[in-house]
Length: 119
Length: 114
Image 1: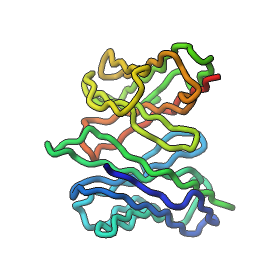
Image 2: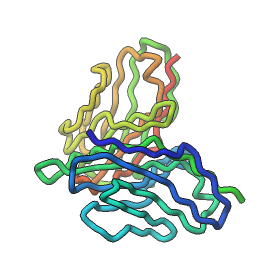
Image 3: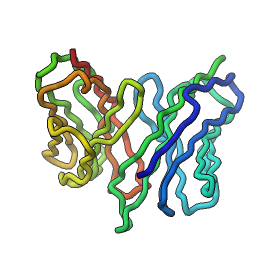
Image 4: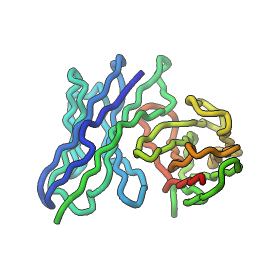
């Protein structure tokens, strides 16, 4: 079974600074997908960034980038130029295709990291 | 326009009651999901439907019964509610069921069982 671990229950950062959230996962699959979702106090889950395991290049979305280390099964999220609106709980998630090449879209989530951005 | 909507947003009820949570998506997606977020914020999938067909049924008590009348709706009915059912329930949808498809989440329904 796949597991996703986020070892940092809480993090804080000053506005405009950079912060990195950690995520490790365990799987025997070779092809899979990794995601970071954001859940602000409003409770709405929002996709931040996704990474395909067969792509060596790290995904980037504006101020958000990942450091994907496949051999180490590590998938960290870097937030540059942190903004007050980045305050939220961040979830790392894993999904993999089944043997037929399609998945049922099942997301396995980590425990979450609460990020607070201070002015 | 709300992409994935859930009703109600808050639900407070007594143990033993039966309740339903409704979910609707206007994104034209063909796959919908129910997730449960417990008091420690841990999110876990419960069910998934693709084109009204049940395709994921995690280890969930059979007091929970999803129903999909059409591709745009996935409702969750819970019988004989227990204290441990208190949680936030999220509905989500995606186009297709491949592993890399983005899932769009509803605002969640906070269920409190007294």
